Image (tube, rainbow, N blue to C red):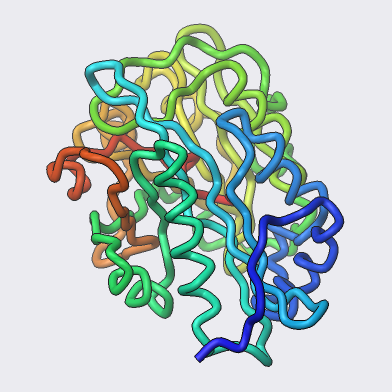
Length: 314
């Protein structure tokens, strides 16, 4: 049973202590270093709105943290669903298994419901997924990977600074004006100019670049995975065939990797350019909990229209 005496809304003065808590509980991934800049980008500067964020207090010490990141999803009919994503959560190692995670999560759900949020969704790991399912989340389905090897597939690199010139030809920083987004085929993030500038141009630690110009543009990210140069195709704007062709023509990496929903024009363009699914691979599992009267049909991957950019490095 939890011995936490209080929970309250996160205050600006709490951020440094919360970051220390997250490092103690979760470590620090190289591409998502737990800095005040990343925290602000994610929870304050987000164009969909500021996060719902709570802390658990024992004495004068913060021992738990939970945040629901604001997000919007557009339906094929043009309706906007107001959503949150259950993202950052941490409990201090000395206070785990006392119900803090569940208490903070359920309080965030109550706040989100009161604010008229339609859906909470996220991609928990296998350790935390059962806890979400016990709290009413439902499994939507798996997210895998599509890869396209290059002639450099078996070449390893010591490159760690991710110089874009080592990964693609003619790179340009992302974040500026892009071709208008297409109509949603399922639940889809509205790719507004404000979102594009924030998601691809202002990320404090990830560097996104553009391949192609004109009617079809790919947003790509250099990466090193297991010693090999990887070029992630995070999103496509405009004509999918032209954008995907630009990504493959520009690549100098060992391979390219991406993911788009089945049935989407971007996935079809990827397959035509030689991308193949990695057999049996589940990179993430999408789960959701409806907070309003939304259709049960949303509880399968066929109802979602997603890309790599909807999930990576958030």
